[in-house]
Length: 264
Image 1 (tube, rainbow, N blue to C red):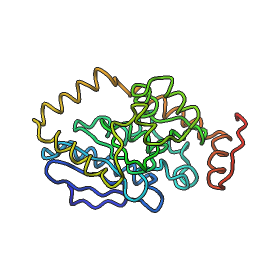
Image 2: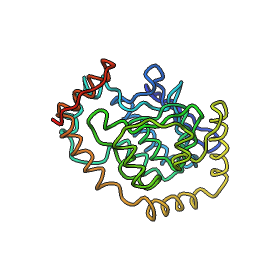
Image 3: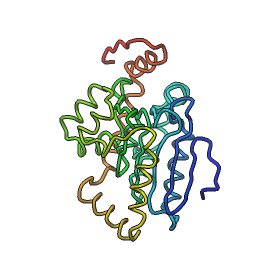
Image 4: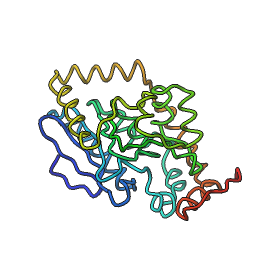
């Protein structure tokens, strides 16, 4: 499996630990349709590999993930049309990560915004570089967050802080993210991967079946079922992608100006 070639990802497996690296550094690891498909495929495959006991998810270059590739998904790709072509359901890549029975560590090396922040929330652990930043930027594009922001975020930081992050779209520092309980630890940038690897090794040294059942138990007792919200997210995005405010949010981003929203 680790011998497969990917356009947007790098997969390495060694000593029972898989490292998945988003590899589009020239655009801050923004996700296009191909990247989403590769994320889904990799996480589904990793669950079938008996040698893999823990997964580290990180980004190449100066960003963890800057969310959707705005030019491809929101402009060229016609996001709303794409969503209407499929039945309402959780984003397939999100489902693959959330359903993964191996512990997942997000080693957040830089900006984790939009779906990048949501993706970090889908992990079991978040270890942040001191250069990391987090932001639920969906509202700035006239959209709603995915299940990471809608389900995981309020469970982790509480409903009031989640509302603040979702409604404002503010970008916060790694230190403030730790203060909120969003990340487990903040480490010097050059120590990030060694810190994540150390945690992964401690987990991988334990009986893998017991760890998987523990993860399943935590998910059942704390995080609950995300599918209902996932269905709502896809239906809602299908509507919001058609609004003038969404188009203005995208245009203002691409034109590097302040947006003017009209509630239409």
